[in-house]
Amino acid sequence: MSNKMRTVITGGSGRFGKLLKQNLNKDYLYPTSTQLNILKFNSIVNFIKRKKIKRFIHLAALSRPLHLHETKIDNSIHLNIIGTANVVRACSLFNVKLIYFSTSHVYRGTKGNYRESDDLLPVNNYGWSKLGGECAVQMYKNSLILRVSMTEKPFLHDRAFANVKSNFIFHEDFIPIFKKILNKKGIINIGGPTQTVYQFAKSTNPRVKKIYLKKQNRFKWPLNASMNLKRLKTFLKK
Picture 1 (cartoon, rainbow, N blue to C red):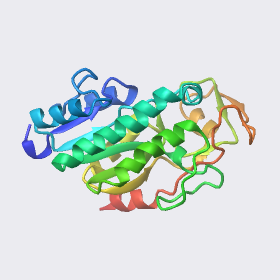
Picture 2 (cartoon, rainbow, N blue to C red; picture 1 turned 60 degrees about the vertical axis):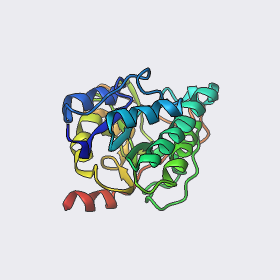
Picture 3 (cartoon, rainbow, N blue to C red; picture 1 turned 90 degrees about the horizontal axis):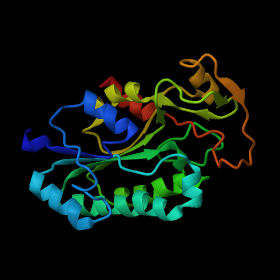
Picture 4 (cartoon, helix red, strand yellow; picture 1 turned 45 degrees about the vertical axis):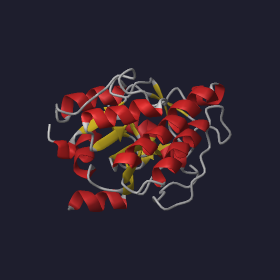
């Protein structure tokens, strides 16, 4: 691997991380949490120095089920906020390019069509934990924040919300996009066409059934966190 683009990816054992291994340059490094522990600052620093890392793709996070962020906030804070802050601090020491995976849940989730510059006000702890990570990344200018709405293919569940709008995109459909924007900086919304979760799910699971989400819901799921993808489309045209 060329030292110029020597890249490490955290969270390689996760659902999306495993797919990246199959589709990205085989020279990318996918350390275990023992080899690179994001909760230990010196572990990150030592790995970057030892492997001469030039680009750091930070996937490792606590994501779903969403209720874990409400019932076990300690895990959510440690992994998504403190761990990410440690990564930012370490990358800044060596001017390593940092790519951070955030989520559409950082937006208010009421009106949809959110631009990257819009106000942020999560409705659930998952969104707050990812926004907490974003706060650290925003302070480091050699970085790229990806607000992504993605999931596995086919749609895993037998029911889907018919009144919740999003920009869901399947993992494998996101990878070609990801390859084209690795060198960008700033914030980019990433997803597919705005549609209800039911419409999205039905494309790969024709037997999926409709369910409806109440405005005040125990899932603390935003009713419309759909994003404006104009900035992404501009980059993809180049």
